[in-house]
Image (cartoon, rainbow, N blue to C red; front, side):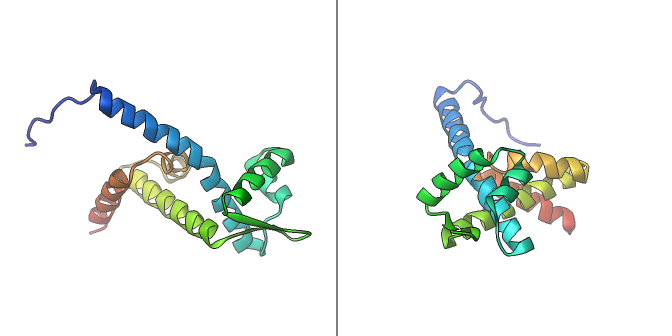
Length: 147
């Protein structure tokens, strides 16, 4: 039996921290999705072109162009004339970290009984909003299930 835990649901400081964490996750979510997709495209075909990114994301090319400019400014991608988009070292690191987070969340969801297709879709959103502490708990739970 677990000891009684305090009710923190109305703690103003905790709620403020939660709101701040959610806002930060939303800010980084799009960049993470883009660099992960760019990495996938490069692995599949050697390069990522703006038209391919737009097609995969289901958005217009001008939307992709705006985001790519932002990613260049953040030092995550490089654009090469007539060649496409490539990740910098920082971009590759972010793509790998995002991919690992996604896999941990997806494996956890499957371990608790979520169908694999649903887990894959749901992990796409959850991966950006889960704390490192919770992610570590997901990992521990999943590893314990394999034993």
